[in-house]
Amino acid sequence: MQNLQNVGLVIIGRNEGDRLRSCLLSVIEHTSNIVYVDSGSTDGSIEMAKSLAIEVIQLDLSIPFTAARARNAGFFHLLTINQHIELVQFVDADCEIFPGWLEQAQNFLVNNPAYGVVCGRRRERFPEATIYNRLCDAEWDTPIGEAAACGGDAMMRVSAFQQLAGFNPTLIAGEEPELCVRLRQQGWKILRIDADMTLHDAAITKFSQWWQRSLRAGHAYAEGSWLHGRSPQRHWVKETQSIWFWGLILPLLILATIYPSQGWSILMLLGYPLMTYKIYRYLKQRNYSTKDTALYAIACLACKLPQVQGQIKFHINRLLGQKISLIEYKS
Image 1: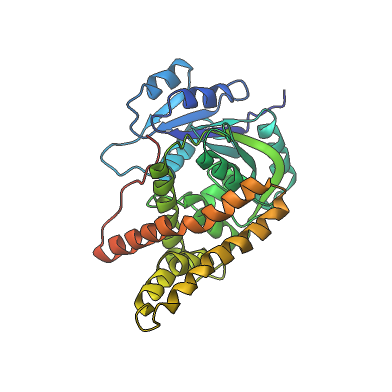
Image 2: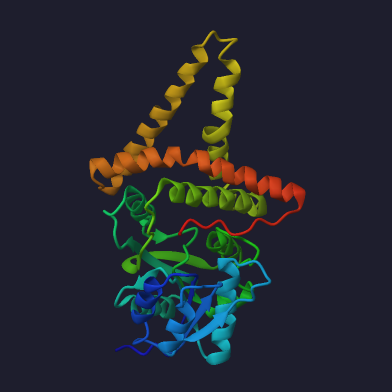
């Protein structure tokens, strides 16, 4: 087995139960440098992690939880356990790490000092269980090669992470791409390699969960573009504009012009199936089945509605000076 003494793991979670157990069991044989950060679990997660001899941090309940805050706490505590750690794998507690991933990611970063982050392919454990799980599996299938951002599962270079003081702890979502914007501004590169990295359990069984998850994404797009939209990276500006147009501006335009156009403005609704077909044509390049391609194309446009709700939510809270709490979709 390859020496992973310079590699640490930070696992974050809340009420993940058996998913957390599976996550821990997938890594405990590879390294002892593991920290689990718990955000107020009530399902025995803390006790279970301790029974496996895992170092556990419980976040202060008086401060609002965010995944970014949890990852930061785990990272800096990890360095107190072993100050020689050079690489840190972040992983969510609803994921398992594939065998061989840690070694492959370590080898890449050791041999490519210009890169601050490396990630691979996250896959859904039960993609056929629900259409929402299938959508998540398609969402994780992002292009291989140099990337603008990573997700919550990634291996990062300690020196790069420390240079930027970690994640922005105030963000309730989208903290990984936001960190990657700042990393790239400092000259670091990010790579997605063609390798299985984690096995994820979305556990989305209801439409309301999908709506909440999409709403949270809309909030993240709005906040990310607000923070870095004027930077050279134009972070999430295009995505935000698309959400506003398809989720709010076009529907309002159609409604506002129905009477003066004698109903002809309703033809603008054809823009939705036309855009869906355009997305479908683009997605066909990924070699999905026709059914899955059509499903994902429809979802890409349908999610604009909850996403625009999330954007509105962000800007209302911003104008009122209020901080929004976590938007959770798992029961």
